[in-house]
Image (cartoon, rainbow, N blue to C red; front, top):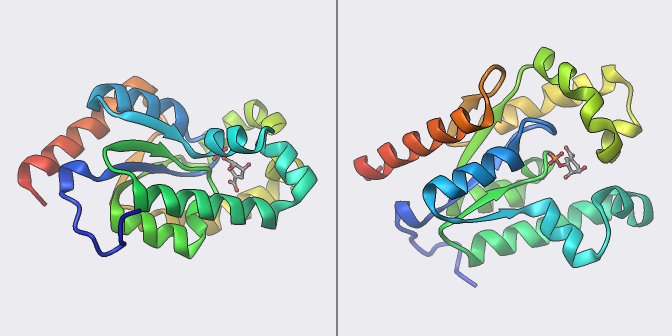
Length: 185
Ligand code: S3P
């Protein structure tokens, strides 16, 4: 495991995608990984594999606090131990301070920013597989959405995803990152 203070060259840093449920983190992350010729890791899928059940079932059988603990250990470990990866996080992960610090310190963090109106248009597609949506009214989800936004904005890059297709988004992000590597920032 890498020490958190280890210097990681910019080009080797993981790319971490954050944003609300349904922003397209997994789809865009897969495409971005192909473009950058990196391995892709979806944090929720990795947790599902490790626990042998979908996230919805982890919420049901162990509860949300247990899920948050599992995701914290997994993501902090990943940030400390991996380089050159593209990683998609579950939408709530970045709200945990330890995860935020680990990601911001070890990786380049890209926020896929979706407006509330655009999110509402995706709502029906998400409800079955997102336990948080099953226990909340639309008003409550909107509150959660608005409370998370400023936290996501602490990512290194913000990309609006309302109107662009995943392919175009992945290309835009790849271009931004390559330019940053060239400048050596
Ligand atoms: C969650 C988002 C989900 C998943 C879990 C909790 C959240 O991931 O981690 O259902 O708190 O927003 P996606 O963002 O991939 O839907």
